[in-house]
Amino acid sequence: MATHLITGSGSGIGEAVTDRLLERGDELYLFARDAGRAKELAARFPGARTLVADLSNPDRIAWALSKQTLPDHVDSFLHIAGVCELGTIGDMGTRAWNRTLAANLIAPAELTRLFLPQLRISKGHVVFVNSGAGLHAHATWGLYAASKHGLKAVADSLRAEEHGNGVRVTSVYPGRTATPMQEKVHQQEGKDYDAARWIDPQSVARTILLSLDLPRDAEINDLTVRPGR
Image 1: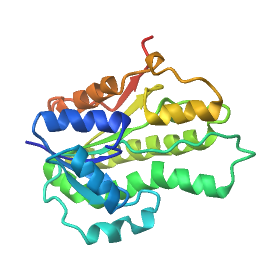
Image 2: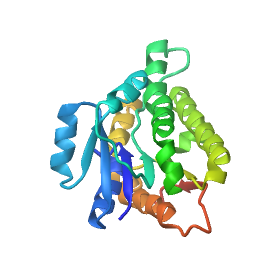
Image 3: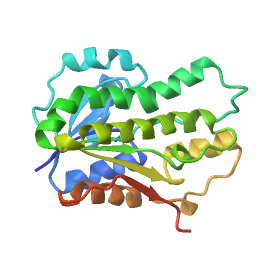
Image 4: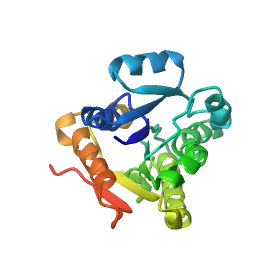
């Protein structure tokens, strides 16, 4: 039985991954932004444990975790949580930049740093669910794309730094996926939302589990997933 840490388990891709890992009997620690959300996740995923850490405030994550019981053993850290705010560079102020970079870039880096000792011992796996925007930036996507390009840099550097310690690092780049975030993106774009046009979160979950389950003689560094319709 493997032990996984997961952010973003409450909906979309994170929910799909959490369901699959619970079904096969793995031990899960789910991150929640506050105690109320932790209670909701515990009810939604019986058997999973919760940890409270507000990803929008990375400076407080280490302190928050120091007050909680953490797992002694960690096999993987799955960074799936994220936020998306669209707008032109000319319109985005520092508040939007700080909010997006905190959740999408700084918090994953800080959480990885805090659990890296356990991951080294287990020769574990870090998975960053990135985005197609982490490879290509388009108009009005600059803020989100910048955070995801930065996350790619974190993953690439971490892979090079920890390869000798046996830690595997995978970046997954989904295209548009039928999640609540995607519905909000369509609202920002002023477009009608049709979930059937986009990738099912279960399909992305399967690719994530593929990287986790790969034998130790190989490693998936980067995995791009695009809508097939």
